[in-house]
Length: 362
Image (tube, rainbow, N blue to C red):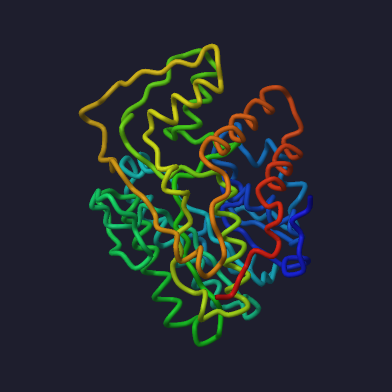
């Protein structure tokens, strides 16, 4: 079943970070919806990569390579592609890498966002701009209730702080420059994203797949840490609904938005690993190996998504068991030499089935 609808048909969209995991999935979703999609990013960050596995270059209407901090080059691409909607995902996305490379992380995640916003100011045809940050932007108190969009921003580690700063940058540009032009600008904060095609180092599901595929024992650093796990397609449904809202009613839909799973799917790392081990079968073993030198990691983090539910009509659809099942199915298909673009499209259609008219202006 197609997810195409009138709003997205022929819409010119530019995605920064389209060679990455989430940006790649977003590109496929937009093409399935009927949009004309161009991208701006560095080369795929891993080998293998989602971008190469699905042959994403074949789908794109423009594929520019460059650093988002190169404002002159990015401005040229914006003028050439003349997008109506921009999704900004290009970033340094890894928490532990941020400990090793804090200066680079701050530079990419903060000044890279400044570069994108500053370049976008010069393109009159842009109607909506969605900046993807992180659920880690909040001043995490490790409390039991979930964080809302108006809760305090903060952080105890470089990655979260870099994304919290990006949130402040976006708000400053929105109020100072874009609001007067009636351009809708929003930030989106998603939970722990899983899905096929993620090969990043030091992320749980890619680590699971690498270990289980090789028959090696998976090393788990912090099995009791609880996270809001969700399949990558869940927040992407919200991103598309939000972008549509931003162009229809910018003042109503501008600002920050959470997209996370149901409360029941906030699970400890150990639960996720055990469930994946049962799905995988033979060769799936893991053990805990603590390290006193390991950097800070929050034990609990949850998102309240009542704003998205009330204003966008968005709710999570796939429980964590379904999300993990689709994720491992994707990796198994790749190991078996399957057509990964078709596998990806099939999962997109399953997630979006019936979602074409999901946006509800409340």
